[in-house]
Length: 97
Image (cartoon, rainbow, N blue to C red; front, side, top):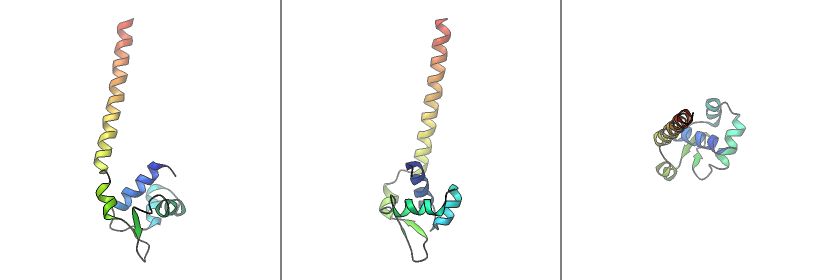
């Protein structure tokens, strides 16, 4: 399973007050089996479930995780850098002519 899917599952669990694997699967258009593989696998140290199979994040995992906002801001910065690089490249090509 890709790290991006793992991260999405983590943030869905982190942002909920307890959520079932089937609800996570619906949000991500995945099967419940795929979600459970991540929850019981690579997220087993970060997340846990209660007796009703509602999933939660461990407090330590939540406090050490980068905020969703900071990740979104980084994605915007990288998108701007790519855009600016294209502008510079186009400008350089235009003055070479």
